[in-house]
Image 1 (cartoon, helix red, strand yellow):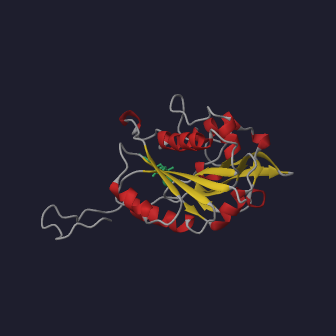
Image 2 (image 1 turned 180 degrees about the vertical axis):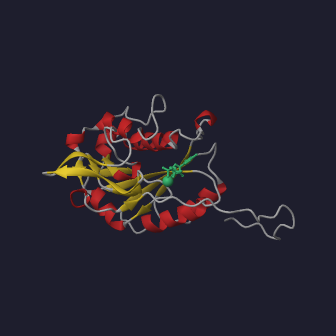
Image 3 (image 1 turned 135 degrees about the horizontal axis):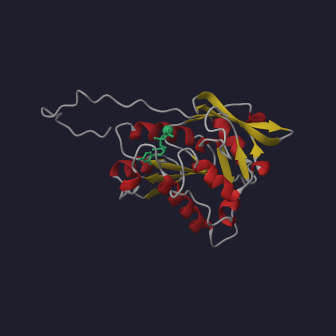
Length: 246
Ligand code: UDP
Ligand code: MN
């Protein structure tokens, strides 16, 4: 059978949230055997996301966990607790049986994913990697590959990172997630930009990485970011006569 792709997406309430989720669902809906794990950064599941998922037309799981207020600060990593909630759900769901073939990846809600990316990651045996566009202050970052093995990183930012790769640049087999039950994203001691390295070093080595996307020469995912919306003309009174979800 086709290995299931589990996409873990942390998401939080803001004016563009539903637009981002719509774009993401439109991509994911075209991927066979994909299970979307949407984790809200909130104290409860929101009506907006619940209604959205119910109509999204793809297999999904809706989780929530709030980021503690002390971690909501510029310069601190985002969505640590939400990604860990996704991992915990996967481990619990598959903990009691022999692992079904599956592949996990972390899909931020604002990135752009080509459909080819899913074909590439589907064959992940342990941990696979590929280039990411529009990240790290460059047009792209990528793993450097020699003789089919990752030997270094093309990056313009913190080249000392053990795995100089964005969250969007790797996938992990379900088997690896289950056989490393303690591997999680850490808050304590995690510097900005080190989330990926801190996580990956718990489950793999650079030598072991499987290069995808033609030996890491193709960009199939982009670290796009959405402009902050201008709401300067939102009325304080003379509100619309109807309440509309946006
Ligand atoms: N996110 C979240 N809570 C926050 C900020 C971000 O759950 O307080 C989510 C966001 O929806 C996205 C991921 O975490 O899926 C990464 O955030 P963002 O895209 O802002 O990070 P960047 O693009 O700067 O890496
Ligand atoms: Mn982003």
